[in-house]
Length: 223
Ligand code: 4G1
Image (cartoon, rainbow, N blue to C red; front, side):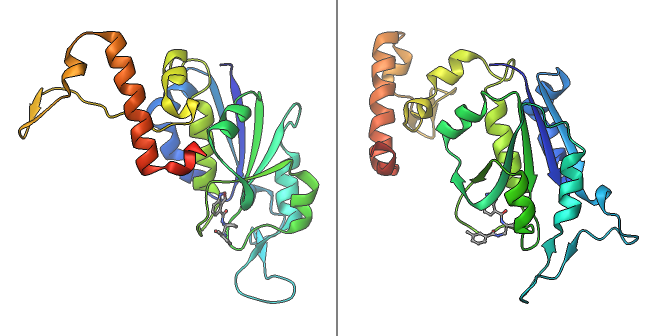
């Protein structure tokens, strides 16, 4: 539950504008989270601001140039930082990994685009590769935003400690169903137990529901 600094290396810093909304935006304003966006293009030495080139060996698409990415990386103060490359080859991001990353004070996140980044600079600077899932994307920016959003929840002032401890996912389960007013919607009543005021019964019901729903919808989470 401490402060965290994210330095994000990207060709599309504007994509991160949406993160500055909502809860994460408020935490940035309150200085509990620092988010620096480094535009890799600013480090192109080329007169046309070229950041990519055709792949050696041929094939479709473009590859981000090692020297430009490396110069962008070197512009960051790397003290006590962990360097993460958002990549389909990475370890899957799950709540356990999120909690682990929230212990760091400084994360440097590298986002690829096009066909990816020259392997030599990845080998030189990256500590860990992380993936948000098995599908094809146009870039690592949305994965980086997923990581920043999920990790930021663990920092001071984003949400309270109780909400983190109470949430089912932290004990490996899905969430129990939620209800709010009205008491009757289209003929469907809110479960009686939730109106009973008996907090022991409510807690028991929620635990059973979380388990029942996990068994039905995501049995893999129980293994
Ligand atoms: C081969 C998905 C390629 C994609 C196989 C999840 C995906 C970063 C992620 C790709 C990316 C599969 C991620 C693919 C991602 C270079 C720039 C890589 C975009 C790039 C399953 C394209 N989690 N994808 N390649 O999507 O960066 O973090």
